[in-house]
Length: 90
Length: 222
Figure 1 (tube, rainbow over the protein chains, first blue to last red):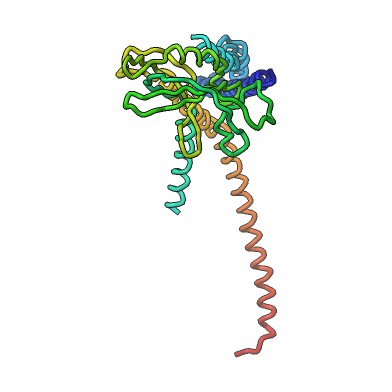
Figure 2 (figure 1 turned 180 degrees about the vertical axis):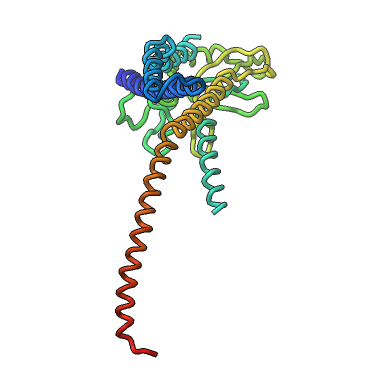
C-alpha cells in the first residue's frame, strides 16, 4: 500500500513538472508567433505592440489548446493503468 | 583530450544501453519443463537483481522465490524467476506471480510432445552470480519459429525519440528567448566595463608612468 502511494506521488510530481515545462514552452512559442505576426505588419509604436501581444497572450491563456495541456499530467497514470491491465489481466 | 571525450561518451552509451537492455521486455520462445520454488538469500550484493515486492518487509534476509524451468528452441535451458515487481522499479506493475506460475504449469510439456510458449521477460541470466531474468508473461505459441513483433519496444523507442526531439526544441527555444538576450545584455554591460577598464588603465599608466619617470630621475645617468 505504501508502495502504491509512493508511486502515485512520484508520478504526480513527474507529471506536474512535465506539465509546467510544456506550458512554459507552449506559451513561449505563442508569444514568439504573436511578435512575428506584429513585426510582419506593424500597426503602431512599441506600446501598441506590447498591448497587441498582451491581448494575444490573454486570449491564449483561455484557449482550449492551453487547457488541453493538462492531459500531460494524467498521462503517467493512464500509462500505469494500461500496463497494470496488460501485465496482470490480458 | 580526444580520447577522454570518447571514453566518456562510450561510458554513457554503454551504461544507458545496458540499463535499457536489462529493463526493457524481451521475448523468448521456450518449452516449459517445470516450475519450482527455492529459498533465496537477500543479504549479498546480488540483492539488487531480486525484486522488492510491495508486501515484503524491508529487513527480510531471505525468502522463497518461484522459478520457471524452460528449454529454448536451440535446446539450451533457461530458468526464469517469477516475482512481483511492485509499484516502483522496473515499472512493470506485475502482481500476478501466482497466476503466471499456474499458466506456466499448464503449458508444461515433454521433448516428445513439445508445447511451445512465448515468455516475456526482463533481466539477465548469469550462472556465475546466480541471477535470473524475471518472467512477466507467458502465452502459448503455434510453433518454435513464431514471429514476434516487439510492439512495446517499438512504441517505447518512438516515444523516446519524440521526447528527445521535444527536449532539444525546448532547449533551443529557451536559448533563443532567454539566454541569447541575456547574453546580449551582458555583452553590452561587458563592453561598457571594458571601456571603463581601458580608460582606467590609461589613467593608471599615466599615474604609474609619472611615478616611474620620477623614480628614473634618481637613477644614475648613464
